[in-house]
Image (cartoon, rainbow, N blue to C red; front, side):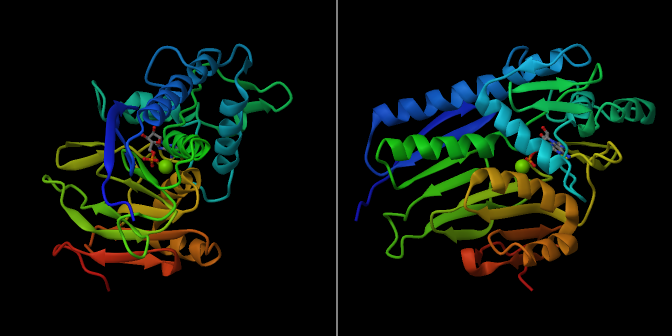
Length: 319
Ligand code: AMP
Ligand code: MG
């Protein structure tokens, strides 16, 4: 059993990215961070140029041909944006840009501004051509935003890079999207221990510890990016039907799944469904597990076959 870990970190995608290996391997570390940078360059909407920004810049004018990888991620985002009862909408860009939550100039826009931008967020106004990998936003001002799934997609690609380099035990952490490979060499049962952050904790305290094996653990929460004005908290996940941040009984949702892309998609969708409807959805989807952290300081665990959870915070209770 290997007993020492080697952690490598870089600030990328606006967050701290870390890779933990159990034997030092500078070549692999270089390949992993290089891969993340390349994908961020294609997918970001926080810079002037990227493949996604070229689609947005051509909104209302013409289709844009993108790489096969970016196209297939867009196809998935499109599909989940059209799912019934899904709060997921990758055409949400105009609202994200209007509110600027977590960025310079964050604001509560006027109802009129929100109304105007909402008219530019209909995913049905997006045309995809799989033959040519062309994406067309039909109205001027439309913008796609892959922020809710890009990290999940990138984590899965990093896993493939590691496997191609014969690494079968590792942890990738893309600022809240954690993907574990194989069994932990530090635990006799091979379980990885992943800390679940206590929402709004100032000293990085944990609600609990999640134990998984060869799984992805992704959290979406209202404490990740937000600002407060007049005692009201505005966070970064929007209700595509109102244009305001989603408001329900949840502080966070953590999804345990096989791939990080699924985890990223469903952490956002289950958060939007709220604990009751999300629980009903999960009964039909036993391959997905979830941990709901509620504002009333209780925790609900669903489909517990795929993980174990140990409560450590005294502020929260497990019913
Ligand atoms: P996540 O942390 O994975 O839940 O994703 C949050 C990010 O997704 C935000 O910072 C926005 O870039 C984007 N986003 C916000 N609201 C939505 C939504 N309703 N559907 C899809 N993406 C969204
Ligand atoms: Mg997500």
